[in-house]
Image (cartoon, rainbow, N blue to C red; front, top):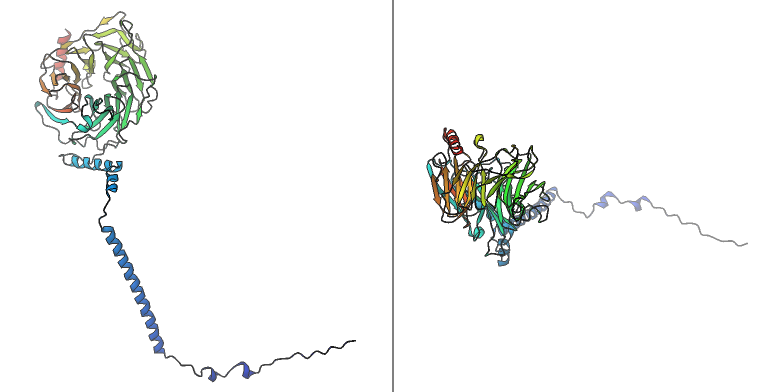
Length: 509
């Protein structure tokens, strides 16, 4: 057996003297700081903090002032930057819009802030300053021409806006000297912007006819030599927003006849081309015509086709119209079958008197319902004719019958390109011929000669009255649009209706 001897475990014990010291010994050798010294030190620390904060604020103010001064400094653009800005489309659009406003502002009594892109028409008519002076005269008020747009082009058609009476649109053919420019152009001129048009629209072919929509102030409709129907929007750029395709479903020949008929909620665009095709379109859907009528006349020697050069509808008539043709004969056309007559060309009743193509056909305006069946024709045989239309509801003749004109106007020395009734006076109309003469006729005063005339020196193609019947726009082959002030020549007197009715009775006797 083995025995181990372990030493006892040492036990450490601390007495009070070792663990703590006396209070007197703890403060021995430590200096006591007075209260005033503490307050002084605190003030010094606080002052230093305030100085640092003030220095930071001063630096921040100086930095901001330097940045503001730098921003105020005139920025110098490089030549490349300047050229890029001047050539940008947004800059050109801005300058064009603002400069137009400034030019309008220089015109007296005109709301130069009018916005033609607003469809509501709240500012319609606000642009015409003054009501014009009265009196019997025919004076040139404006002559619109812009070499950048109309040089080497001829005016093919003119029309006034029904919503904005100071706007007139003109259709132009191609410029043979500028093959890189658009073939067709439509320029919208304003009576308060003399030197350049408000809008310029382009087309892929010569624009033959143009018309403002009576039911949408932003829409302009045109027809082209290629057979296309084009729609422009004043809120968009110069290209058409809609156009008909060049397919067999629509026109493939020149369209010289265009008319919007109907009401606000139900209207259509009627067009006729030189191959005898009449189409009805919805303006918001031009992919395919809604109606197609092929005009044919079996009695024609070479072809059955009827080459339509112009057309018009009588007032409040949408189902029947009269067309003028290249053979010098006018025919009635029915869009639908009627009692005693079928849809299409009525070849039996012919308005036959002209020996050359009919250039224009115009029905009497709705200022006198008793004269709604009267219409004028202008022809290249140097004459005009006054006709009374056969009632559309009357059955067609069983045999061919030539309807004779009420009167022949032959006081012309050249082609007669257009004739338009006054919207106000029942017996007044205007004519335009190849000599450049604008004639104003009053059948209550003279049946053989115009009562007033004006000469431009260049042939006039088309005419258009504004709704007030105080202005006439005439388009010339020189590319100018001449606006004449009619004054009181077209203002009817109380007995003018009865006098004109007596004139018609004497002509029919």
